[in-house]
Amino acid sequence: MRVLAIDQGTTGTTCLVVDESLRPLGRGYREISQHFPKPGWVEHDPEEIWASVEATAAEALADAGISAAELSAVGITNQRETTIVWDRHTGRPVHPAIVWQDRRTAERCAGLNGELVHERTGLVPDPYFSATKLEWILERTDLPQSRLAFGTVDAWLIWKLTRGSVHATDVTNASRTMLFDLAGGRWDEELLELFSIDPSVLPSVVASSGVLAEASLFGEDVAIAGLAGDQQAALFGHACFEAGEAKVTYGTGTFVLVNLGAGVAPVSKGVLMTAVAVPPGAPAQFAAEGAVLVGGAALQWLRDGLGLIESAAESDALAATVPSTEGVFFVPALTGLGSPQWDPDARGLVCGLTRGSTRAHLVRAALEAMAHQVADVLEVLPLQVNVLRADGGATASRFLMQFQADLIGARLEVSSEKEKTALGAAALAGLGIGAWESPARVAALVERGVPYEPQMDRATAEAHRAGWRRALARARG
Image (cartoon, rainbow, N blue to C red; front, top):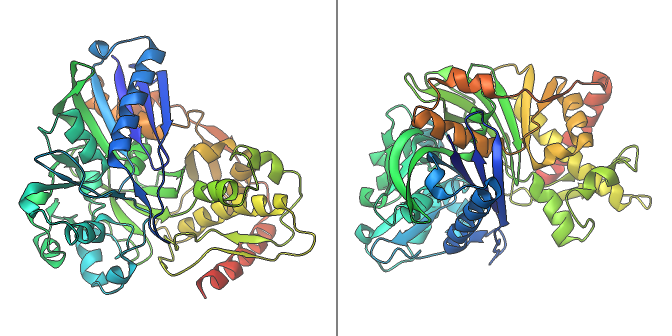
């Protein structure tokens, strides 16, 4: 078996070719451009996204030494909530993709009925989600809605891979639009009316695993058999199939998910979200999710905005050159704050600076901020987490991983394979074509990560947390 996993993320696209043991055989990667036309606005070019998928798929196949004809299936995972609207007749986008980080609809979200949104969708009214982005685009196009198609990135890629014959999304991505009734498992009529959205614009909702379409890939027909939003794919890639099992993914943002088991379990309104989880099957499983809007993006800002580092990889060694931040805290609320504060008006803040502060102190503070934000989420989770499984680019920072374990006072298992999101998509696709008989077989293939045990005494850890909370309050005030 050979599966092509497509992982289309916020800063770039990764493709893996994976075998029946979930072992990567080939890889490809391309960055994509970020566009910031106004303060708080973040956009992508949908055609560039598609071009990056074609390029990385070809690169991964070449690296694996196989052709598209040798593929058994394709699995897709994607940045969630990012909103694309295109013309069904021409296949061309009518507006740049509005990225999940975009805050242009904050005022609209502030006026929404939070009780209704949370009850129906498990989410909180925030510009992060797709509904107000879609509403904003529809208000600015002259084409009738009957001619338009909306999708998150997964639906756009399926449309392109099937040459416009299939308009579909999976339940995990649909649940991130603020238009989907979690309990009913369908688009919500009242919410569609609230945002003046014609149902004809929406994709059909399919299961996350199973053959849903035939992709035309480099002249070959290949089954698309796995589909999930990036964070649910990572949860699956870590084999977090039981209640209480949790993962954190350090990417552009940082996302914590803990499996709640079957049934729509309530989570704290206005603090965390209820997310649809996989594995597939009945009854459906759900997860509590905390979404930190700026994670690795803080290091990108230090690199591209301030020129303090040449690469994110440099941050670990630089942070280690000082024994502490000497009281410097960096709250990276560069696009507001997500979980658990949900404050779109918060702004980034550096405090505690003295004449002795250096770039090493600020870089260390940025890494520590990533760990503090994860600790903020874990503090309000409805279940205790004894082991947190970690993936993503920032897991390469040994300093960050140890500091994270110290802050949360729990074991951190760091995956040796950073592309857990792509592996999750591959595993869903393999299940979808029957390569494995059950999720339990997938779990047996997943290797446990490198452990980090807490070493810091709790009094010291709490002193760090107290300083962070003071800085956080200032960023919000």
